[in-house]
Length: 519
Image 1: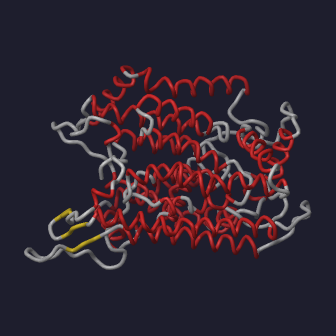
Image 2: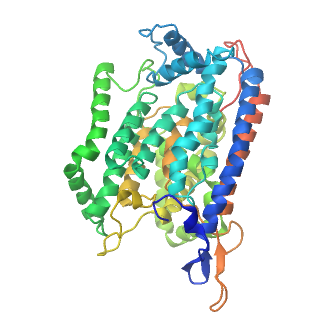
Image 3: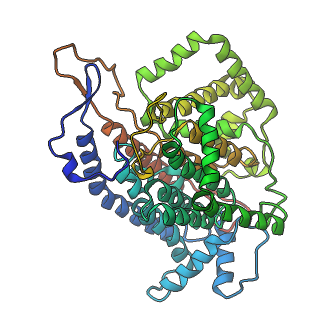
């Protein structure tokens, strides 16, 4: 699909597109269906989150929950004007507390709600309004068959924190907005890049590791110009050289804005003597290689509607049958990683308020070697296969000689090349492998950056796709059902998680209020 926003005039009376012998797609119809579905469901979705937010905040947890005590306490210090006071237990920069302070002073004029509710609204507003409307909608206009905003705003690892005062929502919003500016260039090539770098820099005030995703976005910004101006082709190594040369040629207009972020971050590291603020003893970076498999496993689980089909499972089966020796050593390598590169943080074993506690205790870190190795290693292997193979058809490929028939980066489709695809994997690796904690929240950005560039499959979920015979009307396929199922899948997980959160309460001797389970 073209990189330009979809126009209604382009969708009138458009014929089906033949994508292979006997198979066709009505892309224009899929686009219209996607637009109408999002327009119809979005108000209902907003109503759902508003009602459940009210119930959770007033009936279920009208008190500070887990890490909220630190975030709320620090924000109250800022509200009181104590800008030099810092809680040493807090490990992230003060972006959330500055935003919360501003929002609190605004809302306090119009309402008598509790401080806790007002501060939680920061994330609710970001999740149900800013994320889908400001961040995802522009991308949707450029790639209306790629994803639906109503689905991505309902992503369970994000939606969980719409109800709480945590750093994850706005950290994600700002770094994804930086990506949106690069892909859509709404204010022209120069201003959009500087705004992208600004949003990326602000996102680092919420989570330090976003500096790594800033590097990914910079690579993307350089690549989308270099592939046109330097005429990328099938010589992959040559394309890397062209990218490097172009980054030097256009340093001032593309690289410099992000270089400012990197310099400021370096100053912060020198001043802080490390990346982590506050409680450094419990958040030391390490080398937990198994984290990459945890991440792929979660992405595989949440992306189930995108890949599940008989033909996809057969594809994995055929790979195992055709390359048994290679698959054996791959699984063996995963077992070695499990054995020697798994770190068990004390917080993981001591905190039964997270799903990871039960997942690790019963499966991932089970004392039974049959479960820990024989079961989980193949699960990680299949999850890695899903991560790679679901993306593979979405990769932008080049012709050996013929240059891209485009002159402007904004005309490019929302796709990654072999360079940015490699950069995505590298950034995912560098972001999560050093982390000592097994936290699903750390997989939010790896999922989003992967999902935005994945084009949903159009093949049937059940049954085989049989092309029509020559002379017959071609079989029509569409991705609409899978995109709707993705939304339904997320909402099902959200509903189950919320029910468990509301009904499954237990006590801790060290806590005054009932404790509950979240991601």
